[in-house]
Image 1 (cartoon, rainbow, N blue to C red):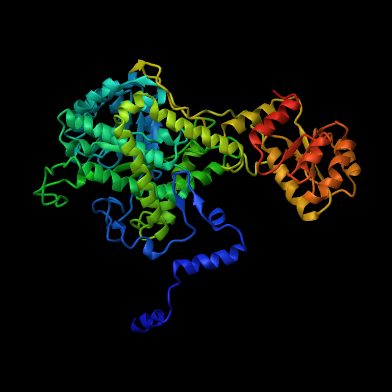
Image 2 (tube, helix red, strand yellow):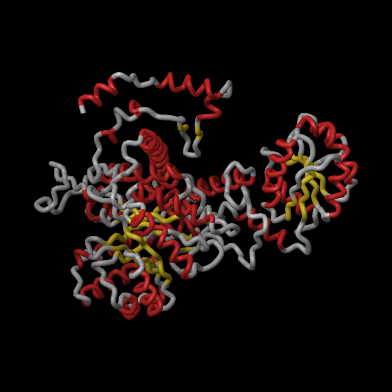
Length: 634
């Protein structure tokens, strides 16, 4: 060991400036900030590298897993999480059979969605037949006005089964604010029943009932900092209301559960959950929750502040927002990396959204794949063995801090403007998230935000085969709440406009043919043909690439033989001055003529009558809509 220490002592660690100087040399004159600094949607920049000195003075250096403020997770000795699958209870008997089946296939957490009219003792008895509430996490969702009734039924049912109530783990999804956001209905009056619900669950100490369903924000396109900042304000709203209603702070905090989303920003999502635990612990700490079991539980301060109440309970659900109907198996890759983010961030339970949910009711096959995605992380990748695997990473620790700062600013802004409920009723939360959604759609249209298989590298030969997109559900069918003019979350998936365009093309009498007229410089014509094929195939056009033509006339003749509706000239910028106008004249209006690129001679080409150019700065969606209109496709 001494020899190793001596060996490393002989090397001097490079300074930050030395690293930057080396990078600048390798960039060969390119701007460092433009090429190397990631300007995040969260409002802060990410550097290309980080050093030990970046986190030396941060609290994370001395933080331990399982200790306040829980930055590194609620658990100390493992990272075990619940593998959850949700079941719609249309028929209690069928739902019970399905639950028993999947409990034997790796699931240990069930989520039952029960229609209001089916909430009864008989339904629960049938639903939980042969299921042990002490061995399985049980989560229930129903109409908000039925939650107290459901709680009383569950307590009676568990007692009748002879369960040890203190060992039963689960939740009832009581969240009146969710309906304000999703459906624009004012259900704020129902929040007062939260106290009665907590009292009804008094004998089930491990059952949460005040839920923060920020998954709805993620499914509506919210950025990470928005979901986190709003989720904290959302949870604080319930905590404050319950404390003001006379519920002890520790009792109220222990009943709060966060049902959060997981998007595709891999490292940012890891940082989000880590930052969330830290910030929520500090929020709850300000209420000074008193430990009621100081003689048995060591997790309290000298002043008697309950640290257990400061733990953030999180169920993470992979998002529908970035799912695509075309090339839908890519959704498996998306949800896999999303569930990896959640698992590495030490959440309590995970729901993997089946890959086909955006266009049909998930079937046995897609649900099995969704379950196995989590089991893969546990049984083969052993993600459940390591507590806070991201801890100590200079990058992720810095990312966690930066994201926490942005989310905290948003939290304070909401609080200073009346709190989350007031902002939701005023429609301010929804307007902010909808604005983000609109920005992301605009970025997708310009290919600044990529969706593999949709606006980038689409499957050229795929057809919908009768599939139709189902939008993320942002409405509720129960009758509670008053109809108002409150703005609702918009919630359209990122791929929705491209899918609508492609379905429009499929419905046409003839599939348009786009022909690549490749000529001149080999490297440039190949690169531009590949770009153009991907660009145009996103609309469902049949694309025909070529090895190259000796003259534009031969290229145009080949295009006409192929019954081309669109001809794309693919060459180098310098050669467009030579080939651009002759190819246009040879085509003589028999097809839509496009030049691939934005050459210096563009104005001269336009003066000759050439109108269409496609390049990396083009608005892909709007351009394709224009082509469809010119082709008579509506």
